[in-house]
Length: 87
Image 1 (cartoon, rainbow, N blue to C red):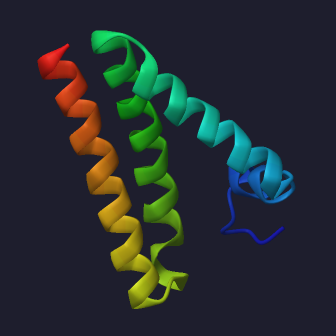
Image 2: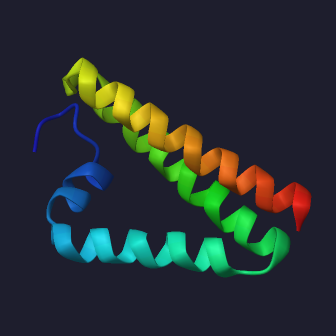
C-alpha cells in the first residue's frame, strides 16, 4: 500500500465488484421504493458516499467518465430531493 492511499480505499479495492454493484443496486431500489422521506434520506446517504469516492478518484478519471459520473450523481440527488419534498 502506498503512503498516500487510505486504508479505506485499499479495503474497497479488495471487494468483489459484482457484490459491490449488487449492494449498490439494492440500496438504490430500497431508496426508490421506500415511502416518503426515508427513501430520500437513504438516496442522499448513497449520494454522499459517491461524492466522497468521486473526489478521491477524480484525478485518474477520463473527462468523459467524469461527465457521466456527474450526470448520474445529479440524477440521484434530484430523485432524492424529489422524494424528500413530495413524500
